[in-house]
Image 1: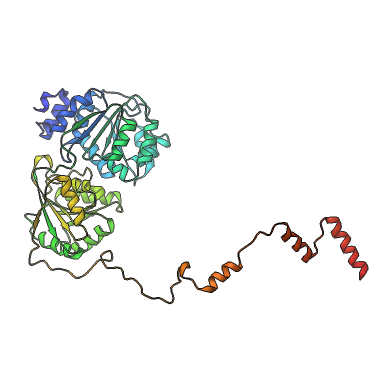
Image 2 (image 1 turned 90 degrees about the horizontal axis):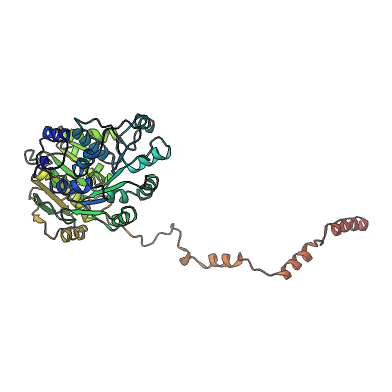
Length: 452
């Protein structure tokens, strides 16, 4: 089947011809008629199989020209980079169509985005946080939304966007088509589907967790972080093989530490991206890597979702991810569009259980390679790897309450209040000679003066 066999309009066919696309991927082929039917859709497909075009082609086929101000299609994605990427893909498909598109996300001036959406839209692509802010301020009206697409909903739930998503659903029109595409399916995602979707039709191209056949996977057993750095420095010497390498790490602090270590060896060849970097810095890093100005990009897991960069030669997992789904998303950045790719995972002894879970999910074993002899085994440990030393005795450290001495308990007992009831009040009155009424007090004062 080719794109010409689908019920596409001539402008869309011309745009696909300009892009050099002739044959739809399985998810694009199966999703087209289902999305066109207007039913709620849940699509599960491996990363890198063209899910964006899978939902955009039928939506653009049905979207008619309009001059109304409010958008009719809403696409929600988890990260700013994915907003920019989806907007770029839609603009490629709408070269010959008069469609107004806008991407909104946090980290930039909200007033500029308010001005942009006030000029009139057909399609809005947004992250949940900024979308909710614009909707609450009434700068963006969602009353005309006919179709909503939720892309990578499991990442949004991991990032804590569930509350905002549910609030957004509450202000959307009830008569709408819900579309969701993802590479993995979790219990939380199933719960969202049961609450929001109406008898959705499911499309599953491959089992969640099935590895892409065109990605060769290898692994190394490495004792610690700095030995991993030494191994990376050794592998990256081969510039012909590692000409476009994406390195994933689990945490921002580790990403910065790795960048500082590798930048000394490859100063003009490496860039980094994570959520603590400014939006301009992040976009510039992606463009430099995409264009080949830098051949090494260090990224965190949040960046793994939906990041579409052509011809990534290798994905290297500096750490073995705790959640197997994250591993699937990471390696999906290479071997895209049916091209061959390579994945390498570095595993310490503490991370072995994570690797076992990944292999169980994929139902296959990752080939292990021996550590090259020229790679130095570092004895230096990071603060996280260093063993915690337990203090045997510290006289200056305040003891726990359970270990406190007798004086502490005596003081507590001494200060404990006891309710003596009415008798207690009578004793107090007797001690301080307090009269019962104000009149008695006046009488007592006069009495004292007479005695004197």
